[in-house]
Length: 198
Image 1 (cartoon, rainbow, N blue to C red):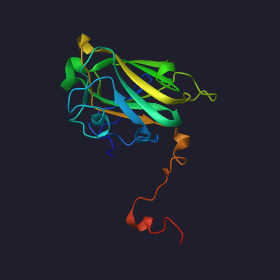
Image 2 (cartoon, rainbow, N blue to C red):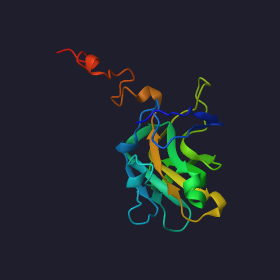
Image 3 (tube, one colour):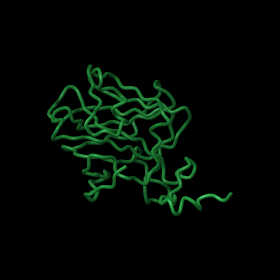
Image 4 (cartoon, rainbow, N blue to C red):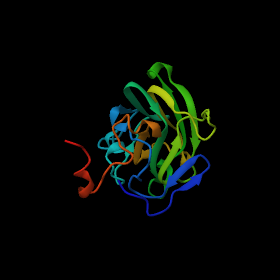
C-alpha cells in the first residue's frame, strides 16, 4: 500500500487520489472475500487484473455493451464504498464515464443503488455504494448484499470497450475489528514483541 504524495480531493461525493498505487484507505478491504467475474475480456486482461495491484495492467472488455463486473460474496456483507482506478490520459475513449451500481441477494434480483458520472478521471476514485443517509446524518448507510455489480453504462467519447485498472470493495469503518484488522496495529519491530501476552 502506498500513501498518496498528492492530497486527496473531494469532488462532490467522490474522494479522488491522483496516484498510481492504491492509497491507504481507512475502510476495510473486503474484495478478496468474493468471487469475481466479468461480462467479457480480452485474453490476458481478465478479472484478475482488477485485483493485482499493478497500475499497468487492466481489465479490457471485449463484447457488447453494457460491460459489467460481478462480485459475489459467500454471505451477506456490509458494503460501504467502492474504490476504482481509472486513467483517462492513457485509456482515452476506453475510460468509463458513467457507472451504475447494483446490489442484491443473487444475479436475478439486483437493484440499482447508485449511479456515478465521471469526467476524465485519473487515479483512485472512492465513493459510497449507497445514496441513503444514515440515521446520524453524518454519512451514508452501507448496502447489505450477497452480490454487487458494477456496470459500465457509458465510456468517454462514446467508446465501445472499456479499461478498469483496479477495483476494491470496502466495508464500513466499524467492521475493521470484526474482519481482524486492528485500527491501532503495532507496526514496528520494537512494538510487535509486546503485541500479545504469552
